[in-house]
Image (cartoon, rainbow, N blue to C red; front, side, top):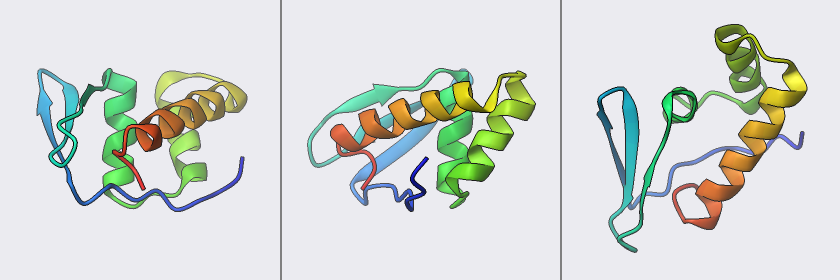
Length: 87
């Protein structure tokens, strides 16, 4: 996996509702809901955690293989970037 810095768009606010993260881009009006795994990933992104550590955390917390965790992380990052939630 190409390691790039994950930076939250300055126009994005987030709130946890019933254990799940809701993201809102104030500039575009786009909102996005994350499941519990996505919420954990978002929390790690907020704390400036690198991608390798995020993958390892997913593996430890959800008992999945690194390749599975990496694929899910890559897909989520792409979706968040496409919707201007990450830079």
